[in-house]
Structure formats: C-alpha cells, structure tokens
Image (cartoon, rainbow, N blue to C red; front, side, top):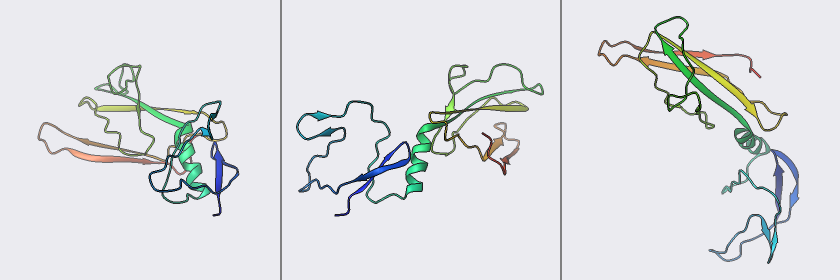
Length: 159
C-alpha cells in the first residue's frame, strides 16, 4: 500500500509503486527488474532502512557521500611548523577522513606546535562540504599531567 519515493542525488525524482517481497525470506533485487532487465549504469550509496526517512534525512545521507572533507596534519617545535602535511601513514599521499563526523583519532608527534589543513571537495556543485568546528585535545605522555582541549567553532560555514 502507498508506495514510496525515488531519490536521485538527494532530490525526490518521483514516486514508485508499492511492492512486496512476498513471504519472509524472499529475495529483493536492486538494479534488476524481472527476468533479465538489468539497469545499465552505476548504482552507488544504496541503503535500506526499517522505517521511512524524511526528505531532509535522505538529503543529509546523500551529502555525506557527495561532499568530502579530509585533513592532513603536521607538528613541530618551530612556529609555524615546517615540513609536509601528512596523512595517517605519515606521507603526503594519504588523508584523515571520516564522513560520520566522529572522532578521527589523529595522533601526532609530541611537539609544541600543531597545524592541520582541511581539503574540501564535492561531487555535486549544488552542495559543498561544511566545517563547523574542530576539537583538538592534547596531553602529555611524560606523566606531567598536562592535558586539555581546544575547541574551534565557527558561526559561518566556509565554502
């Protein structure tokens, strides 16, 4: 009953009729209709939920895949630090990234100064990545009890 909505790149692109998998354990196909009618193209970011998502939830899910935000870091005793910005393997070829917005667990050498560089990219020019805040926590492995956190929060979204 009712059917559903079809979204393409985060936008409602029409309605689809109701469907049923029949009895429990029946198969569901994505990219195939009937016997040998296969979709000719690429399918990416398929997700199935046990509830209906709102249009804004669908758009946010799409933007997490289409908008990319990645980081590289460096630290040193000079202000500003010198040397290359690097990713998790210590080279300039990799980046720290996490689309979920969770803690990336970036660990850097124990130095006086720290810098990070954010790289923004998008697969859809209608949407840009957003960076609202960065939290940097620090501590000392030397048992000196030095620890704390810097929280950088912006009122505007940088695009």
